[in-house]
Length: 76
Image (cartoon, rainbow, N blue to C red; front, side):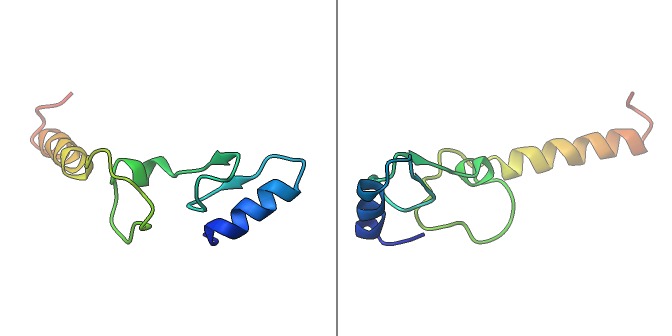
């Protein structure tokens, strides 16, 4: 992550596209790790990430149910 003004200056000076990761709107494109987007996993999430959903609990519950059924010989 770099300051927005630096991203703007670099993007303006280069003839090739610039891709930012939290560098502001002045880059030609943006990269966002989809696991951050859906708030999946444990750990620190970058401050520029917008959380569209929190799927961690849903996924963890689904996997726990699967493991329980396999151990109880209810699945497959």
